[in-house]
Amino acid sequence: MVGLDVVVMGTAAFAVPSLEAVLAAGHRVRAVYSQPPRRHGRGMKEARAPLHEAALRHGLDVRTPASLRDADVQAAFAAHAPDAAVVVAYGLILPRAILALPRLGCLNVHPSVLPRWRGAAPVARAIEAGDAETGVAIMLMNEGLDNGPVLASERLPMPPDATTPTLEADLARRGARLLVAALDALATGRARPRPQAADGVSYARKLGRDEDRIDWREPATAIERRVRAFQPWPGAVFRLGDDWIKVLEAKLAEGAGAPGTLLDDRLTVACGTGALRLVRVQRAGRPATDGAAFLRGARLVPGAVLG
Image 1 (cartoon, rainbow, N blue to C red):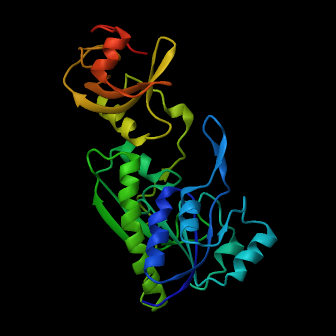
Image 2: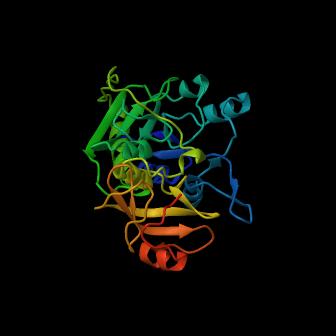
Image 3: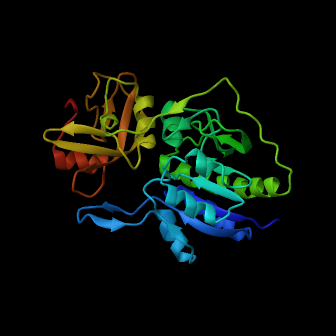
C-alpha cells in the first residue's frame, strides 16, 4: 500500500466509513472539507455535519467553505498538495480549478451502479423504482454530472426490505472498501478507468417535500416502496381529519376495495391494486405506534376512507 496525501470531502453520514477506511489504510488526510454547520430542530441549534464530527474525533483539519469557487478557498485547497481528493456525499459542486489540482484526480464514491441513477438521490430512487439490483461505484470525477470513468464497482441484489438508511449504510461500507482498493490501484499505476456505458443512463432527482403524500389510487407495491424509499425524509403521509399521519412501515396484504378504504382492524388499506397493511404509523408530535393501537385511538372502523 502506497501512502498518499489525501483530502476528504463530504457531509452526510454516508461519507464517514470512507474517511475511516482512508485513515486505516495509512493514507495521510491533509484536510477534511464539509458543508458549513446548519441550524436544526425546534431550538434551531447549530449542528456540525456527520463527517465534520468524525474528522474532529480524529483531530483532523476541517474546512467548511460555503462554496469552492472563491479564489482564496481554491488557494487553500492547493496548499494541501493532495495526491488525490475523495468526494463522498459532499453536496457542493467542484469547479474545474479544484478538479484539476489533485495529481491522481478526484474520486467519488457513488451509491449506484453507474450509469444508472446519476444525481442527487440514487438510493431512494432505486428503491422507489423497484430495481432488482443495486450497488456502488468509484468514479473519477469530471465537470459532468456523475458521468466520469469508473475505477471499480460492486453489484448486489436489492434487499426486499431495504430502506434508504439501511441500504445507504450497507453501500457506504462497501464503497469504503472499494475506495481504498481504487486509491492503491491509482498510486501503483494499476488503475484501468472504464468509460460509462452510453445506454441505461437515468437521473435520480433530488427528493422533494411535495412527494410525501400517499395516493391510495397507486398500486400497493408502489406505495410500499415509497414508504421505504422516503425514510427518513420526506416521508410518506396520509390525511386524517386535520392531521397528517406518517407511515413508518408497511407490508403488502390481501384485500381489495375502493382506494383508501380501511379493510380491517389491523389498519389494512385498499389501494389502486392490492392492499397495504400499515404496520407502524406516527401522528405529528406523538410517538410512533403500531397500526392496531392507532386505530383504537383514532376510533376508526372498517369502511372508513383515509385521505
